[in-house]
Length: 254
Image (cartoon, rainbow, N blue to C red; front, side, top):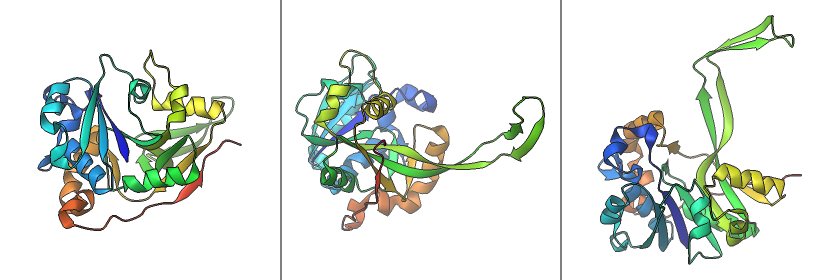
């Protein structure tokens, strides 16, 4: 199995840490995010990882090398200019017919192998992982009448729940035809295009642990959570058996 790890982001929201380190190498406990991700991928059955790298790529390459110490084959694609969260895929060589694509700032105990297996079982162009996220809006929310002048409702710092894209997706090579090769292109652009083209997309719902450490609040929470979640996030240390995770949901537009 093959995984593409998008590790080319600048990590502007995490400055000043990322002024020194590339985002994939920021510390989580006694390891880096990138080491954790590579160990997870190997544990869940992946053999090859393509690292799409950007600023400070030489540091990432020096730490990971050819991937042998992680039990993986690792090769690199260096973005000369930012290509967005998906754009680099159109330039990669040696892609398998179906592969996993993972953002470089996702901390989760998701079984990545289950996502690709779910995707292959449906034979669709794309499958996306989704997580039910609760967010508190730190503002007082006003409900105003249609005329725009009379207050009809008020809620202080409400909680909202919604499904969010986790940044862990499985694609068929068929999606490459939808990705421009000469300009930056993001996941949002790909989803908009696929919906417009009525391409079938499946959703893999996940109810475990997930944080986007590109967000400062999530990174701080990850530092607090890591000690007690270590065995789930680094299953190779406890020699657990990989656990299947699948909860299929269709997202094919009607």
